[in-house]
Length: 335
Image (cartoon, rainbow, N blue to C red; front, top):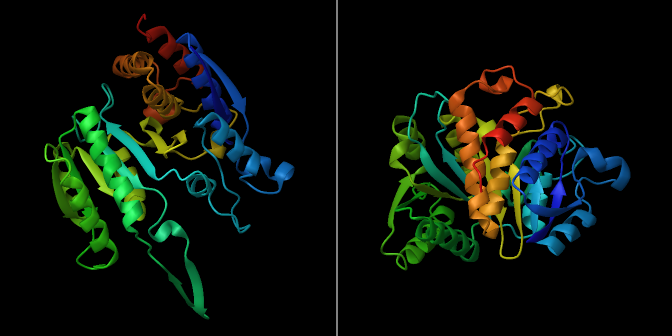
């Protein structure tokens, strides 16, 4: 089958890791036509803005996008490109699976959890203003609609992927109206899934417990700000952002992305680790029903990491991007 998707290589190390991922996807004998566009600092001279309409139109047309790390210009009054994409395309659900990798030593073992984050509101809605010199406020917006959407996404994911528990993060004891509404709505949705266990924990308690024993968590459901924090905490449990994939999913479009930064300090040096974006591409394949190829990629990554001979600098090795890419291609199981 032939597919047509949008490709945003990004900037910094983005074009390098993107090229590596496309090479591996080609080795899987996948027929994907890429409509390439871009966003971020690299296109400012051309469009005068980091997220031009042409990017949004391409994703709306193709429904699926693969995105490398993107830098938003700092100090020029622009909103984050990532936030802009989520709002413009109503990508209400951030989906971040986090698992331990063979051969990657961390203080924790057998981590296998999913961070599900509401993507469109909370403090990240950007409703802030200066009320007086030296005094600024930000409004935390929580709606029934968005809370129900993200709760149903989490419980549907549990049902479809055989996960058994959803842990809901909140601070309802302090923000009783906003976090209280979020919890009330999640409880209503949870009642439709009696076969999935649900528990409600204060955010600070989850941070404590995940450091003690991350294996006790299965799916963690959070509002926007808490989800941003927890995504990075969880990534740190398994070796860092260079190993963790991510997706932003809406009803009509989905954007699969590396969740790490653009690392301009090593751009163009052939040192970048493509695994995070590659695993995001595997999530993309799983999403469109190419599950066998998604599993082939996951297996190849595990095989290379477990062997430990070919690793980039962030994983304690000296291999180049090209060397790691070839090692993963060589490790792909036969169809």
